[in-house]
Length: 250
Image 1 (cartoon, rainbow, N blue to C red):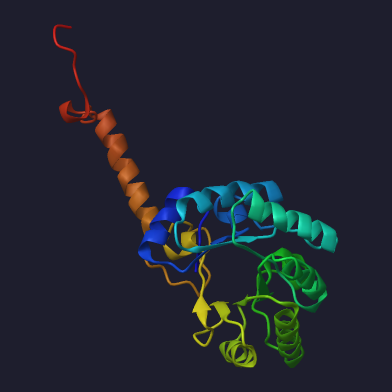
Image 2: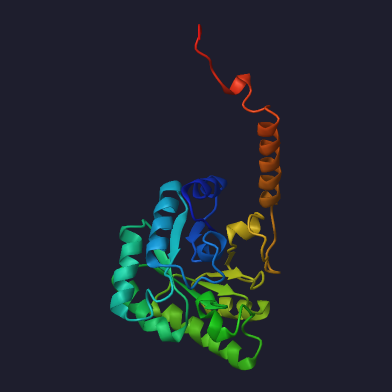
């Protein structure tokens, strides 16, 4: 699984054979320039999900439910998740949290809205966590994460993202569940992996988490290409004859 925020990127990742595309509220940082995901609105998620859904032909499209779109009440969660599916074209939604959101998950899945869970480092709770930090280093946190994972499975999530938790704990949780786990900074024992595409391809380099493997340096390539374009324009090398046409007799 990789994140996508527009039709062109979604089409490219889809053609490469990616299984799932996440319209993450990470768009707040890598697309909109915010420091956290908290300012991302439901309208923004729907807007980008529409684009990704148009670009993807085979990959499962999952969209994040942004901050305060599901925490206020189950009724709000149903209404907002329904909009993401109906207007955005997503096949499923993802929400953060453990046992406290289990009843909301149960309500959503009971009416046919597929839900993916998310435990560990939950970016929407960054202030509660005291920053973007690994979770699950203490016995208390380990017990809570395992308890929350089981509660979410029982509530009906079809898969569970585990972010920035110890690899051995992720393995224990994976073995304890019948649903698949998707890791991000959680080691190799999860059933699948997800990365923010802008991190993986070197498009967003303001901060690169230590668990990210950069498979390309597209940011550097774009800068180099832009400099070449500027130089060609300033030297009148572009546009050349092959890039223009003329009307005879003028």
